Amino acid sequence: MINLKELINEGTKNVKLLVRNRTNTDELVQFSVYTTNDLFIFLPKSSKMLDILEEVDESVIAKSIEMYLKKRTNLVFDYNPTYIGAGYGFTLNFDKILTKL
Image (cartoon, rainbow, N blue to C red; front, top):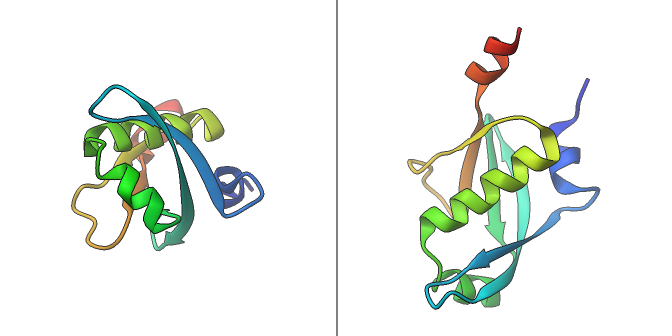
């Protein structure tokens, strides 16, 4: 069975992503990845990362993480804007998997 948490974490609990801020400058941001129930939570690793993310649109952050997840797992994940808590929540899109069966 595929261990999605291990695939996403790349053997560690840290993920580095490049995001483009409002001034069109690319910034490297580190996230810690956690799972809870059906959510994968990407939490900025430090307050410095939070400062960088303040200058980036939320949709850009979500799209960057979605692309990372798809690239690493070949599965489709959806951003969950209703997630209440620190970080960014993502759920696995089971509809895409079911259509492949």
